[in-house]
Image (tube, rainbow over all chains, first blue to last red; front, side):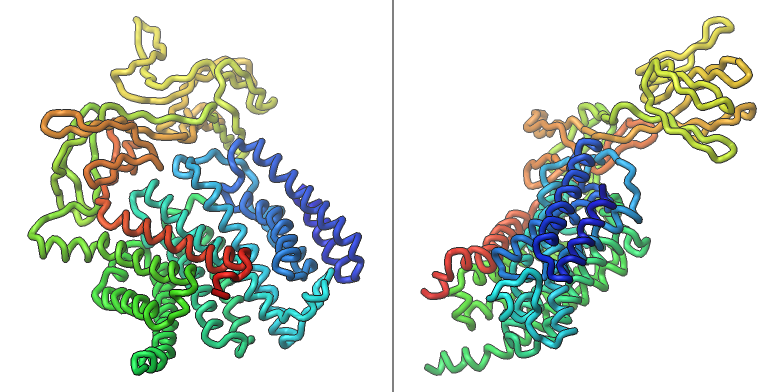
Length: 261
Length: 342
């Protein structure tokens, strides 16, 4: 099912590039439904919220991309659905080809109501920040010209990628903050400390601070330095990738979060 | 008007200073992630960092007064004041905060440590992270400690040729491993395994007095038709007899470990609770949480002990920060920027 969802997202990407809007929308929906079915099947199979290991997290990200994309299009007025589907393929790839799908039983530390909300808000924020980074890339590559994301509305055509990245970060930042706070509260419940200076915590803080820095820099200079703003948004995503992957997979960062492999 | 002039002239420097402090903290966080938990704890509690934290707090407070917009944008105000409160709570509850408090008040407070308590025993001693023992103002009794496992466990079989099998450990079930290895039947599961003897006959029994010793009794019909009995112990994975071509392991994933605690003060039980991971006991300013246990025989439980000083302040800061960011970035836009127009 993961491979089928990847194919559907890839088909969305290609048809969107070819400006075939209707087929793109159908493929998009189909990819989401297949990925959701895979996630639901996993949920029933493991009998807990499927967000325990990196396989499940990336599968969830492959599902979350659809509602986030629709939300961005309808509410934030940001198109680039083709790029969203590329994100969909990229996040499903590790679930389909790299990480072990062997089901694991939930260790005691993860048996709490905080598990679902903490991971879910982080996933939502990560997808929003990934979309912001895509807009930042577009800004750097197309030198700030409005990107005609598909399908595009009139008002979208006037929105610069830098402005679009800013909107995405504004949407994702509260969720990133909530994820950090929920994690801290959870740490207090599980390990007796709301902050343990654990590598995962410190990388999460660094990711959050990069966006805090971005928001302050943009407050100071608005859109005067769009390239710096874009580089900032990309640096934020790089920190998120390190937090999500490198910290868990590398032996460089032994800590309390090493179960989440 | 000179006051307004001063405020205006301070705006840029304060913004830049804040921006540089944010950048510095980002760099410190990344550096801390590389040096390991203990070194990071020392680093963030060091004197230069104490200066940094205080500067950060002062700057945040200053920014609230210098930027009138912060007062008008309620969300942004809450963000900044939330950060100040979190940092203040963090300083109060930090190693350095406790050291200063103890020096000024002449007390010797327990900040963070652990207790090792045997089942049925009562304990007051807390071992600090630095190895020093301090006494609680009350005693903790471990009434009972138990471990819950996911059912069924698994019988892991590894052949000499590298082939492996994973079988659910369900009593009465038979599993055919193929012509090369024969048939395995799980005959019995034991929690307190003990081998008993009556004359020449040896047989397995449950003996609670001997302590936990989880094991499986399996009947193995070998390819040559011989039927043999094997005991597979959870504590000795990968055991194999010289004459066997299979190694057996018994694995069970831990679902939960639970300590039934009583808090005793002046010979009276003042509180009781079964604590688990994620369900600590909060009593008289201390949090007792399930940190570990005796892996060998589950005879004792390891409790983490932390002082809750500053914790409430930190959580108030969290709430304000959370309301602030959602208000500033989401809700004021949903409400049609009415706040900004005001």
